[in-house]
Image 1 (cartoon, one colour):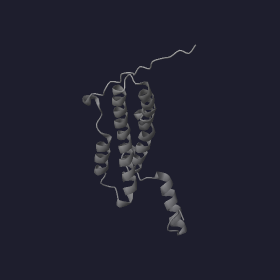
Image 2 (cartoon, helix red, strand yellow):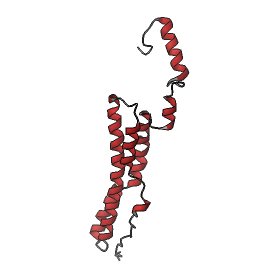
Image 3 (cartoon, helix red, strand yellow):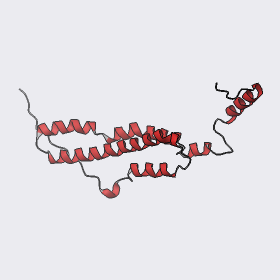
Image 4 (cartoon, helix red, strand yellow):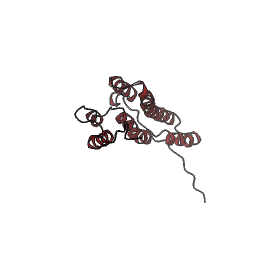
Amino acid sequence: MVTRRNLQAVQVPAIPERDRAPDLRDSVSAALNAMTWLQPSDGALRTLALRQAEEIEGAIERAEHAAAILRDAEGDPSVYKRLKALETMCDATKTVGWLGPQLQGVLRDLGGTPASRKAMQPDKPIGGRLAQLRSGAAAASGVDDPED
């Protein structure tokens, strides 16, 4: 005998506005604008950082939208099943977990993290001792660029 189950929608509470973190798009944009050392050649990484922040915020907004639709579809099994599939695609936690470290890497490459700014200090040039050795070897051999 086949048992028939009625699917019941799980109530997903709305996120109160006061509990939301600041918008990542605004935070990344403000951080990039404060990086006065960026050159026009950094434009692609700057755009990538903004795009990643947009994707993270978009995933959060899609997840909230899917949750609202899910609440509205309570009692309709076919709609509920389709919305559960959509909810899986809108998993904000996975998006943040995937893009968050990538965004951090882009910002690090642009000098937007404390460690990368420390490495940019004149008394600690990037490359440190290895760069000094290469420079000394290049000067001794009369070669302009040790990387050639």
